[in-house]
Amino acid sequence: MTAVSRAGHDLITSFVVGKPPHTMRLALALALGLGVCTGCRFGFDEQPIAGGDAALTDVARDARIVTKTFGERPGSMTTGVTTDATVSEGMTMMNFDPFEDLSISDLIERGLLRFDVSSIAPGTVVVACRLELERVDYGDDITGGLALREVGQAWVEGNVTWNVRDTGTAWTAAGGTVSSPIVTLGPPPLAVSFTVPPSTPQRWIDTPATNFGLALSVADEQSPTHYHMHSSESVVLTARPQLVLDLAL
Image (cartoon, rainbow, N blue to C red; front, top):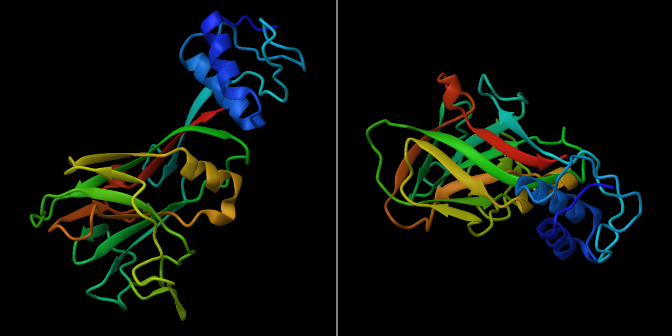
């Protein structure tokens, strides 16, 4: 049986009592990351952990945190998975693919991004998620805050516009059917990193049909703000968007 410290025992039991298996795996991964579990084999085999407070079943063996990257950068681990495009209220029928940048402004312009993460097995636990972008400086920036929103309908990169998500298929709400912000960021540096709630990519992994991607927008979509971000078609290969997932395996 794996040696578990008192702190590790308390952490694990606080997470897993009455919880599904993927929560058990997450608790074990967190315990490893905090250094409160010793050993690397989680072979509980239907037996209670030391102390007898809870029985852990269906627990992943050799649990560890592994980072996987998705995008079109030279160093991305999984490539050929990015779709992105700008939609503009000022040019409602314009499709901006394959522009080399995503434009974000209060006028309103939004950058849509989607990463296909279906290569990850459903049930794999997402511990952390980051979206990495880089700004393009065209000299027309207007400083302001940004936000990420979830997109609620499927869209086609080469056909999407402000009015339609595919040729002949309108958005339920013009500009993309999007959620309220899931994360906000102040005026961004040249290299931008959004910390995305793990629940968002977790849903994409567990139910791939729900992965409609993210919309990058001005935080309140009212305050004068304007930025450009490198797109997946950028000639600056190292500046293309990248999704980073920390997984408990």
